[in-house]
Image (cartoon, rainbow, N blue to C red; front, top):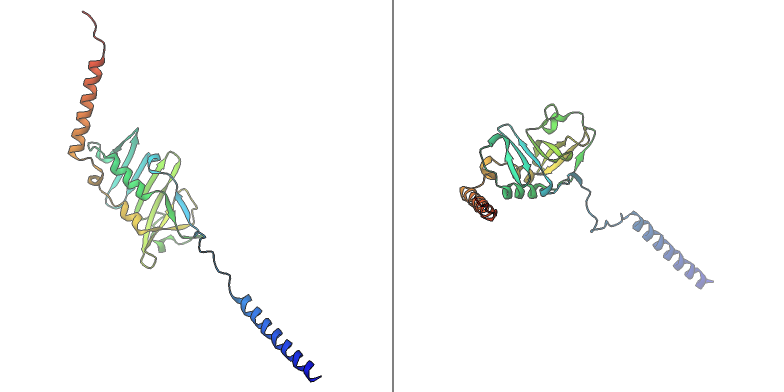
Length: 206
């Protein structure tokens, strides 16, 4: 009899320990998958070669770049030869444009640096109807990012952009102008091509 009591006590202790372990384990949150990607929001999914309109506007200047064939022209500096490779390089650093965070149901845009829906900087990167126009507001020192509004997306949503994005669009006409050497090389190549085409034309007898 005494032996059976001891066995029951041991079983009860084991059951109590098992129940306690179950309760503890049930309260531990499941481990997140380390390989799972963080949610992000695509603000512009064009690639650099697709872009035909690239416009940067801030308080000091506007650069309106339009692509015709393989060449870029700047409307504000029509006398300047634009270096296509330099423009393409800038676009490759910018695209595609992703945001890691968004704030929805915004009613007061001024707290994010927007006045009447406009920020201090606006950048348009488009190909016809594809692409986006992004207005950039205040900088958040804590997250090291800028607030932005995308014209073609939710009207009451503010997104964030990495600080490097604004650094990459801080350019002047000199940053994208072809050097004199490049211009002279292009002119020489055109002259050689013209001469070659002229020489290849059949001569007519007089």
